[in-house]
Image (cartoon, rainbow, N blue to C red; front, side, top):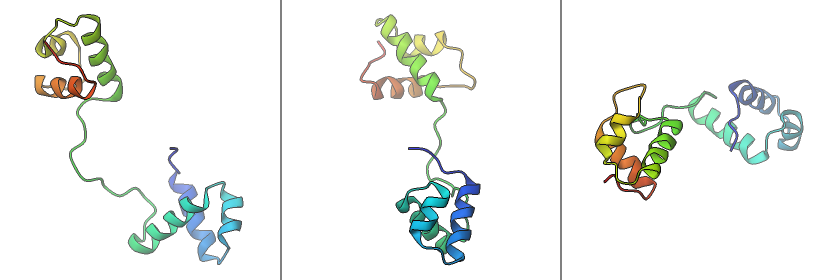
Length: 111
């Protein structure tokens, strides 16, 4: 799924305010009709085309760090989660329980 940038969203809203049909909007912006309608509905509800804040706490690890956790655990299956955490240089402080959760999500166990 590709993200539609804010400028394109604003163009969709502007074209719809100019009373253009969905077919014309789709042809001018190269956005699917369902996406254009979703953008318009968001505009009418929130008066904004920007991304809204998401609920929940964001992940501490990035996608690349998650893959590194998996790779380190798969290369040496006898490492514990604490040893996997110690062997990887993370950008931030990552707890052992976080590594355990990531391993569990991959169907692996740190032991």
